[in-house]
Length: 339
Figure (cartoon, rainbow, N blue to C red):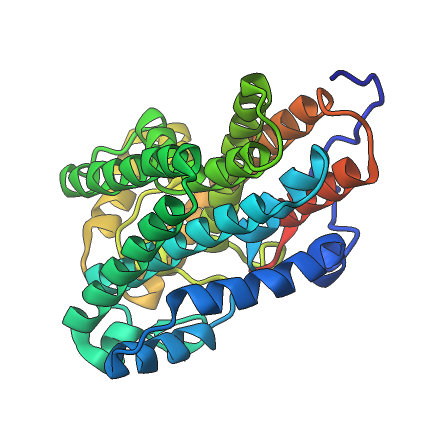
């Protein structure tokens, strides 16, 4: 299963050569069929639930996770019915966690829409999330896809542990680089890893291949989350900055590394600013400038590239094909996207 062809590494000069639409073109028909499959799966004859589900279906995201399932399947022979089941289970899980996150965070919006919890209140949000999770279990059991269920159950456990670990760390305000990587590996990367593993499981029975894709997905997921964390400190090259992490007192990799590099007195001052529940625009600008001036951005970017390149390096174990090149294009997009 090896191939000696070199795959181009990603660095600070890399820009995505294609738009997301162009990148997903090889699986566009699969994504279209997936949307119908997903819509059919979550429909309900309970009026309130049906109304919320219809609203939910209007909130179309990038569909990164089903894309990863289908692109992985294409690496090893092509998309199967089992691939659609895997993608639907993952999207149900992902959507449920987003809805529950909005309830926990008391969010007002999601993907440009007023959040479900804001319109129908927290109770409906929690119950909808539970409904979607139950649908994921049922589709696995009805199709006797026990291996997919096992893989995704591990992801649910990891995501839950990551959320709780972050809550504890945030409360103590003692985030370290090791803790940061443990949390993002569990919270974000575990599900992206599951996409790649389930895509492989859906077409090939070889355990080594499942493990390989799980590892590739984990590195993609870590790079994906670091890119998200960079947005908060972005000025010109990272897309529109949100500053949400700063306002919510979330300590991420750019800040962790800047705090390590800066003099202790300056770091202590920035820690004090971060602890403030309400920060002025001047406070936020000071924190952002501190991160830029003390190497936080450069370190985080390099670490992001390193994980993306680990994924690309491991892809060399997959036979060369158009599908493998498509997969590399997707990795490039993940770490060069502007939002």
